[in-house]
Image (cartoon, rainbow, N blue to C red; front, side, top):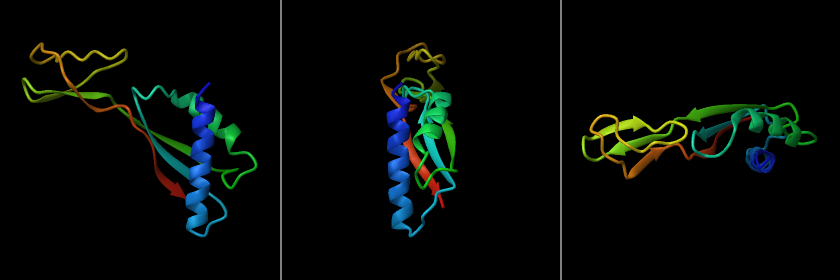
Length: 113
């Protein structure tokens, strides 16, 4: 389960941010998780509960903001959802897309102290 190593990295980074802000505790961490990031949000939540023990995030909650996988079609200038498994064929003009606009994100967007 690679979510445990991701959760551990989130905890480490959130602790660093809190220390830099002069805080000794974190109440919540918000992360954006792309649909195609390879991260299972429920598994990340579980792993976060394990990784936070004994840290400044011991009672923190993890807020996961899902990011849909969206592609752009140059042919008809439309954005469309690619789904899971991803299908990069434009449903509007029946052409393949070459540009993924979102869906691979895995980033901390907020640390509440």
